[in-house]
Each structure stands twice: as structure tokens, then as C-alpha cells.
Image 1 (tube, rainbow, N blue to C red):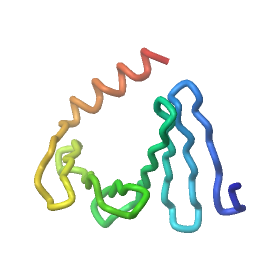
Image 2 (image 1 turned 90 degrees about the vertical axis):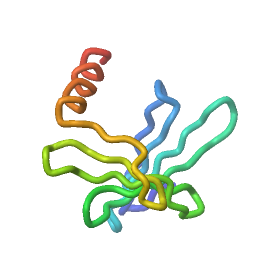
Image 3 (image 1 turned 180 degrees about the horizontal axis):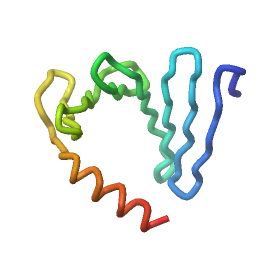
Length: 99
């Protein structure tokens, strides 16, 4: 059950529930997939967002780039992927068109 500092947002079509925590400004994503639940925690960092698993292990670090894009790094800081400002605009357009 969510406290006053938490707001739950179910998104049944995606099989997820988001819990927004006002106290620490984190977002907890609970994903139901074929009978198993996976949990991810999104927290702000100095330069972007950190994604952790339910045990608190860092999975991905996401940081903004100076040109308006983002870069994704693993827990050790190795670049996994990056997206330019144009890439992000294209993704946003496709998401908008799908809804």
C-alpha cells in the first residue's frame, strides 16, 4: 500500500505499475511478465538517472549530453548506447503516434 509520500500509477496495457516516491523523488517500476515480477528503481543522480534492481545494484546510468542527447552506461561506466537529440525526437514522435 502506498503512503502519503507515494503515488501508484498502474499501466495495465504495458503490464507495469509505477510508484512515485515524493520523499526521495525515486520511481519504482514493477513489471509483470508471464507470471514473474521484475522491479526497477529509477533515481536521480548528479548528471541524470540511475536504474537499479530491487536489491539496489546499479544496472544502468543515463546522463544527458551537451548536445541534447543521452548516453547509457553500465555499472562500471562503459557506454552501452547513446541517442542524439534527433534520435530522441524520432522516438518521441513514434510513441505519440502509437497512442
